[in-house]
Image 1 (spheres, helix red, strand yellow):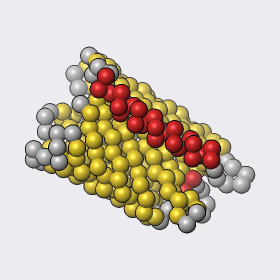
Image 2 (cartoon, one colour; image 1 turned 120 degrees about the horizontal axis):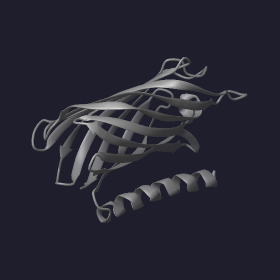
Image 3 (cartoon, one colour; image 1 turned 45 degrees about the horizontal axis):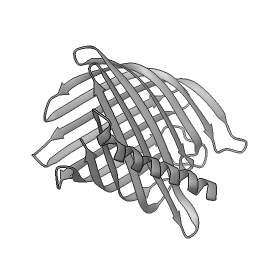
Length: 240
C-alpha cells in the first residue's frame, strides 16, 4: 500500500512540476483543475479529482499531453481509484485538416479492467475554429490491449476503430460551454465516454467548472456495471 501511495504521490508531484514549468517553456500552454467529485456506478462515493493538460503548437505541428486521477479511501477501504495518461501529436497537411497519432493508458479497477492501453492514428478536421466556437472531429484506427480482473485474468488485444468529437463555445466574455465525446470500438467491447460542462471565469487565469462525465462499456467483465458517471465541480487554473 505504501508503494501505491508513493506512486500516486509521484503522479501528483509530476502534475505540479509540469504546470509550474510551463511558463518557462516557449509556446506551451496548460490547464490544471481539481475539486469535488460525486461518483455513481461501479463506485459510489464523494471524493477528489485532479487533471492537468498541456499543449504546444509550432507551425503545422501541435502536441498535447494529459494526466488525470481519481483516488479515494472510505473507512479504510479504497472505493475509487483511476488514473489515466494520454498524448497526441497532430500535423496539418491541408488547411483545417490534420493527421494525428496518439496513445492512452489507464488503470481503473472499478471498471473490471486491471488496465487498458491504446495506440492510434488517423485524420481529423477542424469544422469550426474561430475566437468563439470550435468543433473538431477525428476518426482513425489503432491497437488496443487490456487485462481484466477475472481470476484467472484475461489478457487480450484487438484492432480498434476510434472516433472523437470536441465542441466548445464562448457564450459570454466569462462563460463557455464544452462537450467532448470519444469512442473506441472492438469486436469484444465498445467503450464510449462523453463529458459536457460549463466554465465561468473568475479572473483571467482562474475559472469554476461544472461538468458531467459518462463512461460506458457495452460488454464489461462479469459483475461490473456498464455505465459510470462522474459529476465534478472544479477550480481551474490556466497557464497561457
